[in-house]
Amino acid sequence: MTTLFSPHKFIYEVNLTIQRDIFETHRTWLIDHFHQMVKQNNFIQLNLCFLKNTNPIDDHHLRYQSIVAQYLISDYPILEEYFEKQAKVMRSQVVDKLGCHYTVRRRVLEVVESFRG
Image (cartoon, rainbow, N blue to C red; front, side):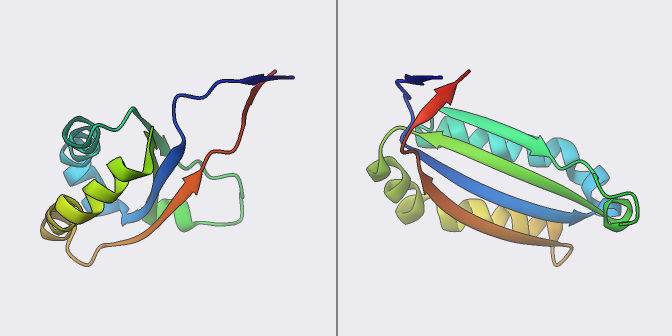
């Protein structure tokens, strides 16, 4: 494997679990919301993933849609500015749309190395 230069140094990851009945109603709005995060905050890229069920005896996926949004960010001050100026507004939009029909977890990862085979 070869070490590659990575233009992003941080990943801001948001994990949402949304009740299926409300997810389908708000799917288009939610995806647009993720796109706005990138456009408004100078993030480099968005990787938007829908979690697939890999456990045939677990029926959680029938009731909930799990989503992972990974925002790639070049410098931590860009993320800090988002937290200071935009986060409260963006999060309140989600609460207004989805109410109590979702759970969310957030974390920030620092990219130490990137590899490609």
